Structures are given as C-alpha cells and as structure tokens.
Image (cartoon, rainbow, N blue to C red):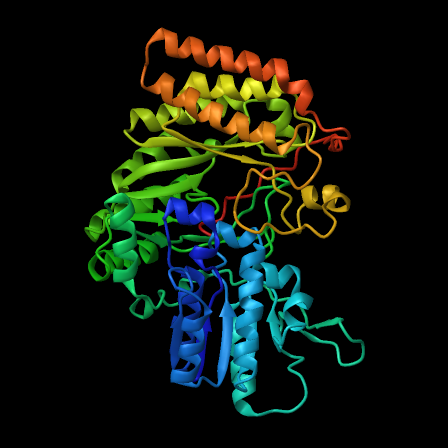
Length: 492
C-alpha cells in the first residue's frame, strides 16, 4: 500500500461523546483519500472513531506495510477544533508505531496547524499547515520522486528546523482552494458503513451520515477558531452537492444527513438553487444544518423545507445584545426571534446553541438569555461555556490564565479554563436548570412544576455571589462592529 490514512479521534476516549453516541465518519480524511486515488496512489483507511484502540492501527500497519502514514484529522468536525488532548496523545502514540516500521509520517489538522512542534517532537516528519489536500498530494509526489533535501517549494508545510532543535521550519503559506468542486467526492467505499449504521440505530433508531457544502466561514465571531481556512470561505455549487447527496442516498442508504458546515447556506440564492437540484435528482433526505439567524430569510427557509431540511441549529449564543456585540456576532436578539418563528412556520425544528461564561457577562445578562429561551421555546438547546480555542482573539485574551492546561481531556465543554464571572459548578447548575426549564415549558406542565422551577431560579440567584470568581476576566470593549462579509459573488 502506498498510503495509510488515519485519524486519532477514538470515541471510546471521550465519555461525553460516547454517551451521546452520534459517531460521524472522518469526512476530511475521506476527501483526502479520494484525491490521492485520483493521483494514482493506493490508499487504506484506519478509522479510529469506533475502533477498540491503537492495536487495530498497529495490525493495519503490519498487514498493509504502507510506505507512508498520514494522520489526517477531519477538519470539518467541530470536535477537532477543540484540540482534545486525548486525540493528540493517540496520534503521537500511533506515530511511534509507524516510525519503528520505517514509514514516512505526515500529519494534518487543526491542532497540527496550531502546534506543529508537538507532533514533530514525536516523530512526525512533515506537518501540513492549513488546508491539506493539495499540499498532501504535492508532498507525496516529492517523497515518491526520491529527491534529497527538503521540499521548500511546497506551500503549507512545517518541518523540524535543521539548525535549531525544537524549532519549526515553515514553507510559504498555502492559499486555500477557491473552487472546491474540483475535489472528488469522499471515498465512501473505504468506510465500514455498517459499523456506523449499527451504532446509530442501536442508540437512536436511525442512521445519520455527514456531508459538507462549504469550507470556512466569513463572519467575525471572536471566539470562533479558524485554523484551516482563516476568514476565507468557499462554496461548492448546488448541483455538485445535490449529486453527491443522490450518490450517498443510494450507496449508504442513510435515514438522515448532518451538513457539517460551520455555516450552511451563506447565500439564500444558493439555497434556492440547491432545492431545485435536489428535487431534480430525487435526492431529498431529512437533514440538519448549522446556520445564523440573519441568514434565515423567508425565501431561504422555504427552500430549506423543500430540500428536506428537518432541523436548523442557530448560533443564538445569548439573549443579551451586550454580549452578542462583545462577541462580534453580528446579529441582533430580534433576528433570533424572527428566525425561530420562520422556521417553526415552515415545519423545521429550530434549535439554539447557547453560550454562557463570556467575559463581562453578568447575572442580568444570563437572565436575558433565559428569557429569550422562554419567549421562543426552541425545539432543543445546546448549552456550553465560552471556550478559548487557539488562534482566536478570545484565546489571546485569556492565554495567560491557561498555563499548561490549554487542551481539554475530553469534550466536556462546561469546564471553565479561565476566570469567568462564575465557577464551573455554577455553570453546570445553570446548564441543567435551563434544560429542565425549557422541557417543562414546552410540555406545558402543571403550574406547580413551573413554580418549583421558579423557586430554583430564585435560589440560583440568591447563591450566585458564592460562585463568583475572585478575579474575572474582562473583555476589552469593542468600539465598532466588524463589517459584514461580502457574500455578493456567485458562490465563492
């Protein structure tokens, strides 16, 4: 085998994700596999997601004896932006197993881009920085050619500096691909789809698979990490996405699709054309997206419903306009309310991502968020605390407080890593209480139950001083909001 592609997110190492049991294939890894095949390489896949452990990887090394091993993390999955410590540890361990077998070793992903030195120190020879496909093909061609020296002419690489131990030598930055239609569809045939189907149907009674329509996000939320694409974005054409959707429907027979884009439907006119293309191919499947309240125009929502959209997760974040502005979110509370109403009228579930703990957030701001949830009654909420992801303004602000703890052991996103207004224990109480409050109000339970919840909210407010941090981080005042991105070009 020329290349063994692998990734290092073992579901079993993350208790929270194991309990959720919503495993998705490594989409970015499968994209890399298809492009390598297109360029004449024989390719294998080690999929860590549902693997029992690194022993399976070691077995594949011995069975296939690959010339090169590429740890290619799925850049489309939000968990990889968190740079989880268990994933880095697993990758470094597997690197050692490949190294003793004489393989050329390459690594790519968000954490690799942010911290290439951590991987190079454990035996990785080449770290791919940024978008990986083109860099990977060029690098493997260089390795196969047997040239000596270092591949200085290949953009987007990090290598050990030959002159200074521990320092990273970087080539020129890689410019991301602007026309992603040139990439072949993911190598779905390499996937053990039945293993995923069994896991999903056992836990939830249906089978979901992932796709993506865009790369990157042009908006300015100052807590959102963009290690791969930065502020750039690129969109596949509606017909290209619909064609893959038709193939996935026939080949993998899923019941549901999760579009893993940071932001789906950056342009309402794209969504309208997408709905037309899906209908023309009879490719419709129930699907879920992540988007923004200001993109949920009347025409876009109607087109989403026509294409099969069943659920939209909106980055509501807060019911406090002060906090939204501090985040540079670029939306208003009223837009959140309007988007929820439009989606409900179209028969689409509207769910909110809610974020507590942003610097400067007061208890009054928290209550405004509670009132937003009560007023709109979203179909579901996902509650997290503000997370300092590497490469963001937010991370730079709290970096001095992180010390050596700049990675999560798992994806427990209610663990505070910096001095927020309140302690971790407070936010965990708030998380449980808001979930219960929404559940009770959506079910229109008896007044006594609501009254009990009101008393719990009163108790939380009475106790909030006990949970205040001694030196909470303050975020610098944003003097002016960033300009809205230009989305006027046809797709890219």
